[in-house]
Image 1 (cartoon, rainbow, N blue to C red):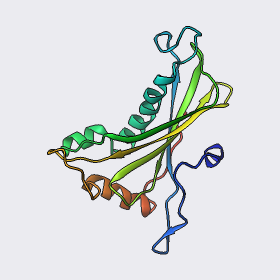
Image 2: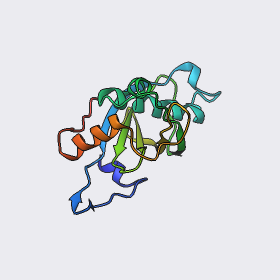
Image 3: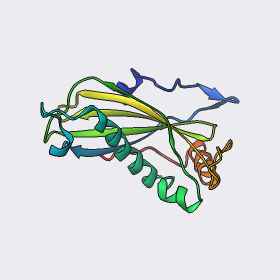
Image 4: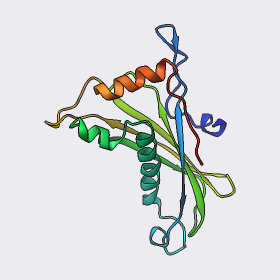
Length: 167
């Protein structure tokens, strides 16, 4: 994770009300660049990086039980408000890569995630971030964290949730 600290999209705060802020929670998935995803140069088309980020984001949400299925059970949607990609090197057809999503602490009603994509040589090929807001069943912006997320954040803050790195 040291590589990610070189690209801090979310400025870490040392403490909140005198309590330390929990470290970001990582989750890593593996993927192979498919033929349908490359351009004429056999390089992963730039627009597909959002899909790669989504793979890691969905896996992280499912693992911690804060994913899209849970949101739908609570009639909550989480549209992407912002997304940014910093391209560093190409991925090519049939190349294996890892995508790490890191969930960053926030007291707000939002999900802050940063991403790190490495090729099979473990070189950084892309970094980025996304911010998701929450809207309720009436499609109104939620100003407070949904209950399931608030409860998860309380467990995270108490140390009952630990990060994993499965790739």
